Every structure is written in C-alpha cells, then in structure tokens.
Length: 336
Image 1 (spheres, rainbow, N blue to C red):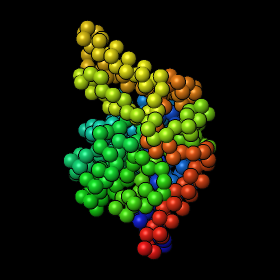
Image 2 (spheres, rainbow, N blue to C red):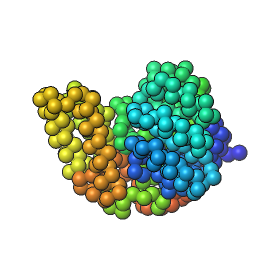
Image 3 (cartoon, helix red, strand yellow):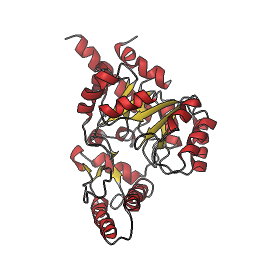
Image 4 (cartoon, rainbow, N blue to C red):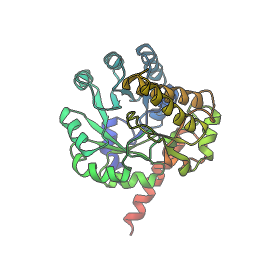
C-alpha cells in the first residue's frame, strides 16, 4: 500500500470509493452526468438537490443509479420546505450518504437520515459548530474555506484546518474543501489529518459536465483574482456572500440588493421575504450562466482555484492527475 493509499484509507472506507475525493454539490452542474462520471472514475459524486421539488430529485437519483452502480451522495439544503420528503426519497433509493448544507440540521432530520441507514455529512464553518454536530450524531464533516465558489463563509481553508482538524479529526472523518485544485495540496491536508478532500471548481470543465461551453470558456480564461465575493450592502439583509467571476451580473446583484433594501424600508416586504428575493436572484442568475450560456448577466460561481483550471478533460484524467501529483509530493518529501 502506498503512502497516499494509507492516508486516504479512512476516507475511502467511509465513502466506499477508490479515492477519498468528493465532488462538491454545485447547483445546475452536479446532476446525473457529472455525479455518475465522478463515481465511475473512482471518486465520490454528489447530487445537488438545491431547490428541486421532491419529484425531480426522485427522478434524478433514479437516473444517476442507472448510470453507475457505485456509491454517490445527495446534498440537501436544510431550509428546503420539503426537507422531510426529500429525506424519504433518499431512503427510498437507499442513497448511501446524505449531505446537509445551509445551516444547522432542523429537529428530527439527523435521526430520520440515520434511521434509514445513510451516513450523514454536514458542513462545519467553526470549531464550536463542529463539536455540536459531532455530539448530535453526524458521521463526517466538510470544512470549507472562503476560497471556495458559490456561498462561502468568512474564514480561509488554512485557518479552518488548523482550528478544526486536530480536535475533530480523531473523532469523525473530516473532508477539507475550498481552493483545492492540485494534488500537492491534497497531500498536505491528508498529512494534517484530513480523511479526504472535496473539489468543485476543478470539475466544472470536465468533459462530462453539462455546463454551457461559454460557461466553461469563462473558467478557462479566468484567474484567481477574478473570483470575487459579493459585498454586504445592508446589514439588515445578512445574505451569505457568494464567490463568482466578476461580470455585469455581479453589478446587477448589487443593484438588486439596494432595490430589496428599499422595498424593506417601504414596508413592502418583511426580512424573510427580502432574503428570499435575493436568494431567488442568485438561483436564476446561475441557471442563465450554466444552462443558457449567458456569461455576461448570469452568475459565474467559481472558487479562487479557477486559475488552475487549464483545459477541458474527462473526470478520470482529472482525478488521475490529482492522484499522481499527491503521490509525487509525498514521495519527494520522503526522500528529503
């Protein structure tokens, strides 16, 4: 067994995959084609449920199972109004792993997921929350730094790793995410105690990804500094920041934020409706970019690792490159 295999052993056994690399759940992108290709290549694919109604998730899981006989997970948003039904659908299909994102799991959700035999993975943006989730019975954690694309927290990957891994790593498997695009970084996190990693931006230009060619081209042209986080305009609207490539859509979001804040001032909406309006803006903007190819006005959610995405290639080749880089890094350190 190579050193890389040994370091990934815990993560591989937990996921049921050949390598301990999870695919991040990206709305409109992490669907049957990308998910099945990731699992078939030896990684671990994850369906992004997002705002899907139960019937669509039911169909998506069935279609994914028809394309792979290997394990994959489903990412569910904790604020989804039909969360209980979505959990039941995952149980119906015997989904092996469920990922809960978007906040603390609501009462009963952890027990419902685990009662059906699935392993539960949650995101932990701070040590205090990580401890609480472990006490609640979560089976594994993802710690994702602000370098990631899409909705992000305020803390970098390197700080989260130092804060959370030493204490939580011995208790449950921890997967590191945010800004990872090369195997050398994977090797470092594994040596620090991670069970594996999660990558998203690195997979957008996979051949199997259904993203519009214009969307992929924007990634191939971008650098790390092009992936910027949205700005908080009004403190009454604590919308989670979003990291995306800067374009006209980024500026439109700022205008939308100001518009919704004005509606709030006039009493036309309450806080909840105002926040929902902004989230709906992001959902529509992302679809315009990913599916329709409107890279000027849509949302180009991307992590800061986008500058390391250089070409469109099959997922199997992407994973093999990461493994080769990680293995070479470990071997070079062993000879020093």
